[in-house]
Length: 125
Image 1 (cartoon, helix red, strand yellow):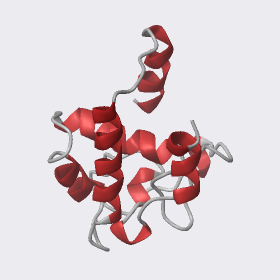
Image 2 (tube, rainbow, N blue to C red):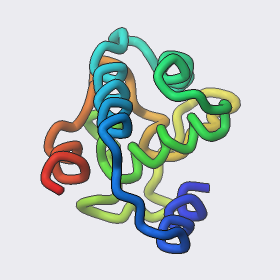
Image 3 (cartoon, helix red, strand yellow):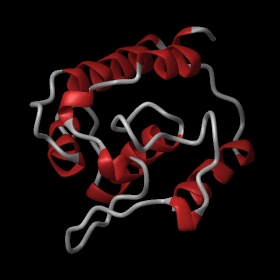
Image 4 (spheres, rainbow, N blue to C red):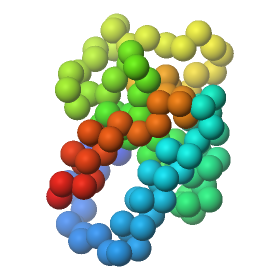
């Protein structure tokens, strides 16, 4: 789960990012921004696999974390950076096998990157 992933960060020693890490982060952003309008997280996962060498579950975790911190969403279902959305308030897409957590499940390529949240988390550090 996303919460488990986020809880693990404080348990590891602080690591200073290298130039290569920033390049990968920028490639992730470019990949998201260059997504086709109708792309969903499953297509984004495949495109990001060309940037990050990782397995399917780890790629899904990255996408879900980007949703939780407010970077991937649509115009109605936002991340938790501004407001926590309780479980009963979270809307599910009306499809079978929706295995992507809220709010990333609602993202489509046409929504791109939430620049304000991207800047908050990655640019102003």
